[in-house]
Amino acid sequence: MTTTWLLIILTTAIIAYSAFSFFYQRKIMKHLTEEEFRAGYRKAQLIDVREPKEYEGGHILGARNIPLSQLRQRHKEIRQDQPIYFYCQNTVRSGRAAQMLKRKGYNDINCLKGGFKGWTGKVKKK
Image (cartoon, rainbow, N blue to C red; front, side, top):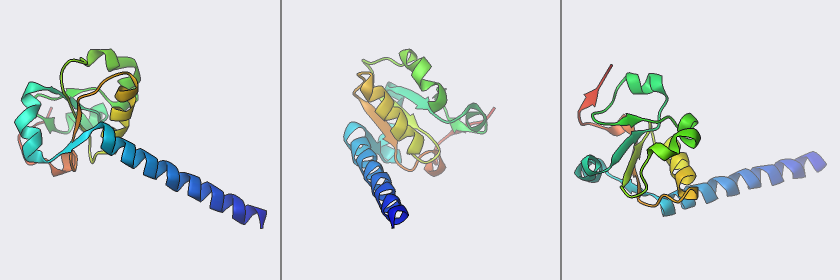
């Protein structure tokens, strides 16, 4: 009986945390359609938060690679006075990156809805 209650409490905590993260990310960053993203990313800091191997396999033309795993150490490379346009493979890492930067005082944070998987524009491969 104790194990059952522990599992219920643990499951409830995980669901609550996931829901909180989802709604918090929606609040702190704008999820842009590809058209909206295209309209503004040339005037912003375009950052690919995927790992280097993924970036080398193909990335949006003009994007800078700052992997989520390195963002805590490299966040000072990102200017606070310009819009930030994040993308990753499908938006999970972009959300985490947005949360991290929001805690550090960044505000104008945007994300490509659907991530790189849904991108139909120009791509550069190494």
